[in-house]
Image 1 (cartoon, rainbow, N blue to C red):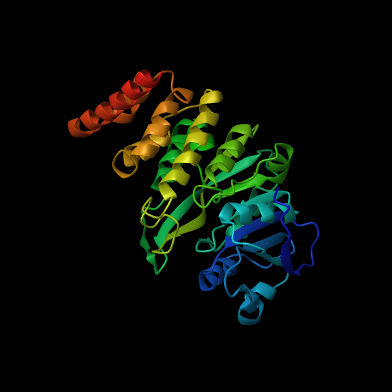
Image 2: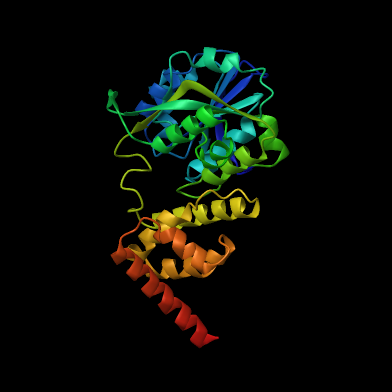
Length: 327
């Protein structure tokens, strides 16, 4: 876990909670307050808010009384390191048997404590729940954000197939995770700006001895213009960072014979139009996550237009020729 020194402001009255809820935060205090108000004040619930060094975080305790409630720790990181960095700090301070995560702009359903308390004695290492998606500025308006999770959960509930849930529910929220699983396997978040959570999530899913998936909504994920997924892969260096995380995720699953389609594929397609050097770098490495380059190209071009296929094969051939000439 991350041992970087942090400044800590705490109000803790319980040393043995059942649940620890970790919330990374950066510069959206009003939305954070909405999230906190969805969590009941209980000695059974340790709430850990890790502020990623927001510009005015030193004024938060004075401006937001919710941060001074019992059983809540407010931790200000000493630097701006991203959500993964903040979540790792939260893991260092977690005391509960079960871990839950929330993003500061999301929130839990009204009866969240009853839901999680129902499953507190489960022998599963991870319990997955349904989610609801709405727009942050209009909670009555449904959003399509993270719609793939709905499909994954439907597959499990209809067929009992655990693999999609274990490998593709690639966010930390919407789950109860045994802290012992994380500690025993030394699982932590990547300290990167984007996609810091997918390796954590796939490690948790694949290393769990037993999982459960519950047909109950626990968490409400929101969409707003300031969220990390807004204008996806259009921010500086975002494509490179997300592609790197996707490749590491694919490599883990390939090594464990659990591949169900490659996460890198959508990024390869973007690279072809946005960053040819990045495309070349990952094209050369496709053998690490596919049985062959031909298998990779077939997968990448599946369902694509003829124009895209021609473009992909042309640049792939150019890379292959250039490498042959060099060697």
